[in-house]
Amino acid sequence: MVKTMNRHEEIDFPNLDVHIDVFRVTGKPTVVDVRMPKGLFSRDFSATDCVVEAGTVLTERERSEQRHSICNNLHVASLSLDILKRQVVDGDLDDIETTLRIAVESLRELEQLASHKDG
Image (cartoon, rainbow, N blue to C red):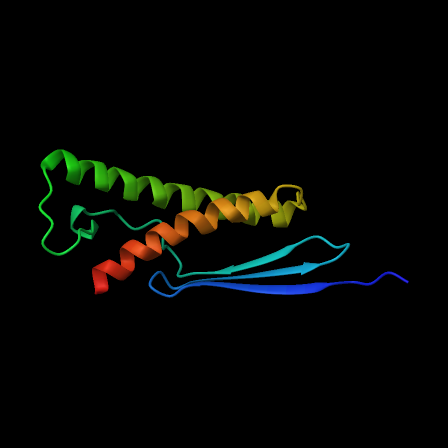
């Protein structure tokens, strides 16, 4: 008798309106479902979207580095979610966990920045 273990993990990024469901069943491929607003990563990036802590004065170089970091996180999140989607569709399930981890890390960084913007 083979005992199967089912695990359902929900990962939410409310400030980004992104929701990820991960279904793991022993002996079966991981299933990932990502829900997010259409065009989330295709919007034009504006310097005004760059978040700084209240009362923080940044030099032009520091602002540029911060914008660059945000853009990098946007690109990594977008690319890793696209790769994840393709891996699931193509049945290339060997690296799903790694790709998912990369996507979640980038989304966490963006979520943190988005929470500072609203607060």
